Image (cartoon, rainbow, N blue to C red; front, top):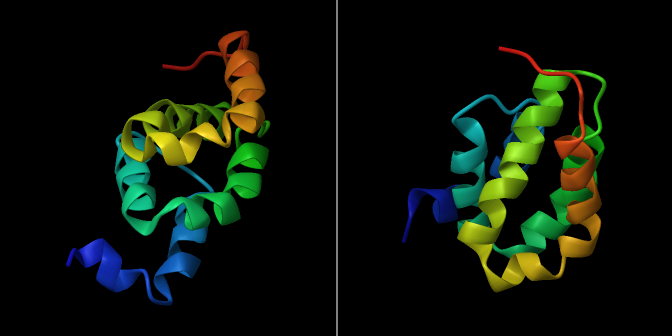
Length: 102
């Protein structure tokens, strides 16, 4: 049993939702690992909020969420394939984003 699994009972999902609002490196990789342990159902619940944040006006928020989408296929494998249709347009938009920060 992992710590993440033990915490997934509650109120961890609420904390996870709050955590998803702003993702700074290396948080996206960690969150991808957490979502992989929690399973595809949790990703399905959070995906609308993650997609909305990936189009945020704040470039730091956008980049954090787009980075999460980079790690999810590696951690969730086949569970993530069902969501590619929703996520791929966001990734393509992110690649054409002219706002860069250091």
